[in-house]
Image (tube, rainbow, N blue to C red; front, side, top):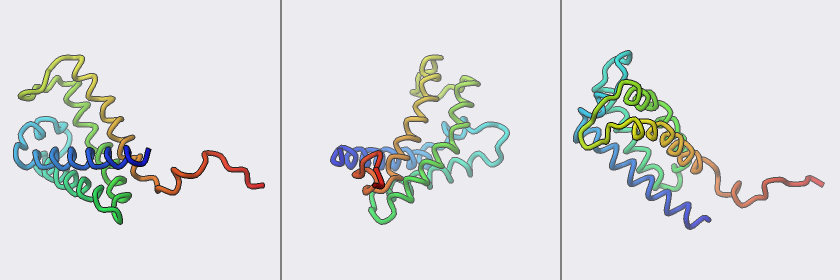
Length: 136
C-alpha cells in the first residue's frame, strides 16, 4: 500500500503544480469561475495558483509534506464555491464540456481531491498500527 500511496502522492503533486501554473498562464477561465460576491477575482486566481504550486512542491518534500497536504485540503475546500458557481450558473469554458452531467461530476470530484489530500495528512506510523488496540 505504501508504494501506491507514494506514487499517488507524486501524481497529485505534479497535477496540482500543473494546474497551479495554468492559473498564471491562462487565468481568464479561472477568473470566470469566481463567484461575483467575492472581491478581486484576478488576485484570488493568482493566490490560489500560487498556493497550488506551493502545496504540490511541498507534497514532494518529506519534512513539510504533511503541512502541505493540510494546506491543499484547505485550498480544495476554499475553491469549492467556484465549482458550485460553474455548475449553478452553467459557466462555459473553452475545451471543457458544458453538459449538466459534466457539471454535476465536477462537484463530487472536489471531494475526491479533499480526501486525497487528507490521506497525506496522516503520519505514516498511524497507518501501520491496527485500527483498534486493546490496552490490556
